Image 1 (cartoon, one colour):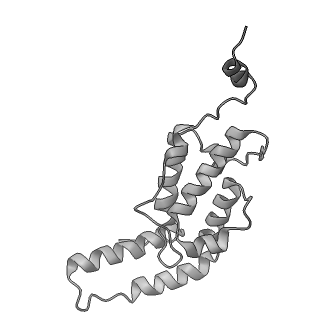
Image 2 (cartoon, helix red, strand yellow):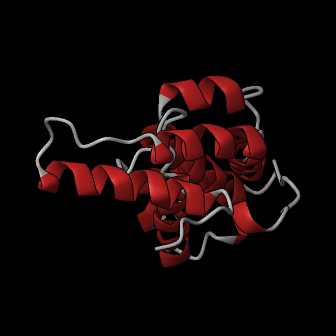
Image 3 (tube, rainbow, N blue to C red):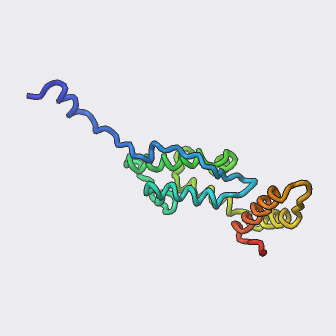
Length: 162
């Protein structure tokens, strides 16, 4: 004969499984901003983070949303929260469409922001690079500044020759 406690346990839904990635909070040292593009560094870090937990298909491959699968939804929500915590608000303002946007759609929208207007960015960055002057900066301040602009030009497909 089952006790009252046993029948209560048998009649309840199973406890939810919390995956280890659900407890991770992401705040990157590299935060992409619209003004100074370090998108490639951030994207590389973020893909590594997703790969560590086997979640890269959520951003790299268009997985169809499965709202009835709590594990898929949990993973997608985790990735979106990682994105929210690791990019500048100005990017989120432009990339977010609605509350139900999948991680993949958010990822693609952010990538599009940095890949759009490439030629205009090349012109601006090229002008900045070629008109850069050391002025009162020390060499240890000036060289990293030059390298940052040169790296950004490389990211948009127009590397600077030595």
